[in-house]
Length: 184
Image 1: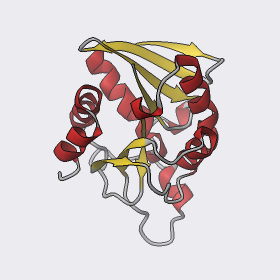
Image 2: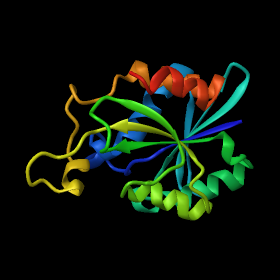
Image 3: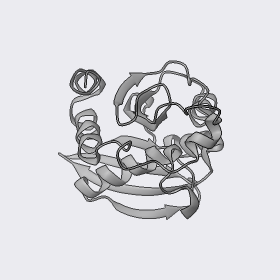
Image 4: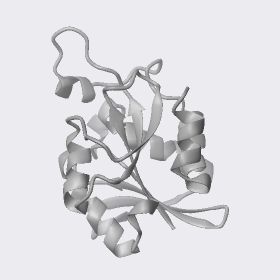
């Protein structure tokens, strides 16, 4: 069983913001793997469940707001009894150019409060991640204003690439997925 947690903020006002790149990524793969979605208040998440090549895959969009994502992550891991090696955290990344994606094992959250919350609540930094580039703000714009602003279509990652990258992770693991996607 695999668990993919996409980070974002609930609510219409955040739907197309850079900070919701994790939610957008889950929407992309969900359409491809035909996940069935439901609300799960106990796990503080929207949950999509699918079967990929005989592997049960749980997609989760925490509804806690970004800075409390760890609450949902711990509830999901505990309920589904998932080994942390089978968890992928998908989130926006200002240190990558817009549209670029990169797999990473653990590492610094680089100021990302959602990633920090997950690390803190799960008690480890050894979480596999798919980082989705959103770039840095130009001029005097703050990082917060940047990630909470709408992403342009030319800066958005390719949904087919995101979906294919996550399928590679599901079917082949982080090493193969990294070799295929981190160089692009």
